[in-house]
Every structure is written in structure tokens, then in C-alpha cells.
Length: 307
Ligand SMILES: Nc1ncnc2c1ncn2[C@@H]1O[C@H](COP(=O)(O)OP(=O)(O)OP(=O)(O)O)[C@@H](O)[C@H]1O
Image (cartoon, rainbow, N blue to C red; front, side, top):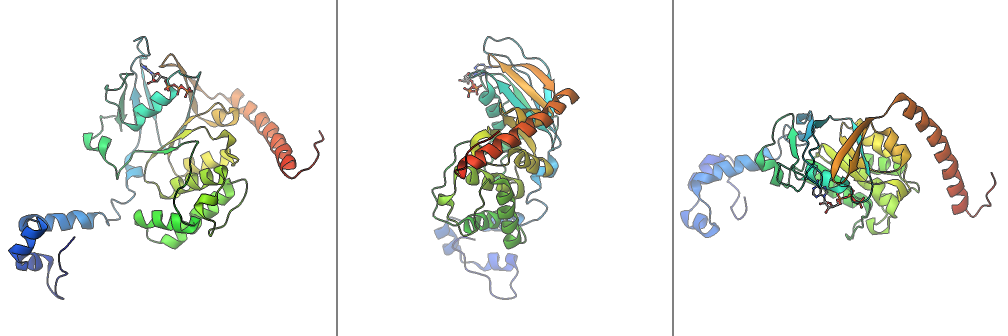
């Protein structure tokens, strides 16, 4: 504990606390009676039961409908479970970001939309709304830049250590290998994070979120132009039982979702289940996408294009 001497060998915590000079405790602004509880709280941080346990405790998240910009009720409740992908579509200004923000802040009828968010079917513990160490939602936004002077390995190691994972080196390696399978252009563990391209940074963050974030919900704000294997990136998150909510108009990603929510005038206008017919289209779009990617690769390599 900050400022306190270590106990002599063989002393129990209780004996040590009892023997500390009162003047020292007063100097440090500590109360003797509270020391044991503070120690217990600190040790709980290392308890494998609580580290990363967040994911397993979320069985569903529900958004209880509010109203659109004109006050028209949305009606109904949308429930999403781990491993599901929900896409969010709609014209500009239709309320997609507001919907994601309602989830991020666990709105309780107190946002402009009047929506309420339930966790496992019940209103969340109010403390969860403001807890910075137990964030429900990890956000992967389009624009991200690193401003830290570390290599990729150092950066991921630092995150793994802060998550108190058991084998930091192995997890760090896993994140970097995974990020490289997602990134169009590979990078090395020794690469400074500031030297990563947009696509590489995004791939690293997706791999990091999959392997190291305890947040059960991942909000993705468009991944189309990031130069990464977007289908595999989303699948990576689903494999880790994340709830994926993705604002996208990329046909491949949108049809990869189990459902898509259509927004209009600030409200949910429709929820469309991806049908078998749409899934069949997805196969065609993937072939077209592979063709276009091949053209992109050829352009990048300075080749001439033939059909
Ligand atoms: N139900 C609502 N009631 C009142 N205001 C709303 C509602 N939904 C959204 N808004 C407000 O409307 C504005 C536009 O919404 P938002 O930014 O969510 O749209 P968007 O679909 O994400 O747009 P874009 O695609 O351009 O990013 C915001 O100021 C938002 O707070």
C-alpha cells in the first residue's frame, strides 16, 4: 500500500497493521481500521475469478425502444446475445451513432431517444454506467492514430500486463500473429506503433480487442477502407463470443450480420433478418470483392490491369 513499509518476515497483515505507528498513518491520511479492507480490495484485483469474468456474465443486452426525432414511439425491444452480429444501416443523420451511444452509456430513458438498455433482461447496476475499469463496450472507430513511442510488442505487452493475464509473452504473440492475419500488409513485433498504416493499426486493435479486452460488446464504426480482411476481423470477434454491433454500408459486412437495424429520422424503422436468399448474394459479392481486391493488389504493384 502506498507509503507503508513492508511487514517484517513472518508477520501477518493484521499484526503488521496493528503495529504501525499512529503518526505514520496520520501523515499518510490512512485509518488503521480501513487498512485490511483496502488490502482485500487490492488483492481482489488479482483474482482470476474477477479478471476477464465480465464476458461470461453477459448473456444478453436489450434495447427497449424509445422514440424517433418527432416523438413517434419505436416500440418493441431488441435483444442481442454473445456471438451475434447486428449491423446498423440508415441515411446520414438517421440516428445510427446515437443508437450506439445509447448502448455505450447504458441509457436509462435519459438520452434524447428515451431508450433504455437492459443487461441480462434487467436494468444494469448503476455503478456499471460510470465504471472505467469494467467498460461494457469496446469501440473500434475508423480514425485511430498512435501517439505513443513504443514498438508493437511493447505496446501489446503493456496492455496484457495491465489485464493481468497469466502468460503475457504468449498472449502478446497471439495478438500480433492474429493482427498480421487481418492486415493487408504484414508488420513486425519490432515495428513502432507510430509507423503502422491505418489498416495495420486497425488490425492490431481488432486483434487486441478480441484477445485482451474484457468488454463483451464491440461497436465498430465502418471498416471498409481500412485495407484489412474485414470478414475475418468480424469473425475473430464473434469467435470470442463478443456481441458485435457494426455501423456499415459495406454489402459484405452488412449481409454477414444476423440482423440489420434500419434507422430513419432517429428511430428504428425496421429490423431485417438476413435471409437465405441474401446469404446466397453474399457469396456472389465475395467473389466480386475478391476480384476487386486482386485489381487493387495489381495496381499497388504497378501492374497493368486486364479483365
Ligand atoms: N431519437 C432521437 N431523438 C432526438 N434526437 C436524435 C434522435 N436520434 C438521433 N438524434 C440526434 O440526431 C443527430 C444525428 O444523429 P446521428 O449522429 O446518430 O446520425 P448518424 O446516422 O450516425 O449520422 P451519420 O451517418 O452522418 O454519422 C444527432 O445530433 C443525434 O443526437
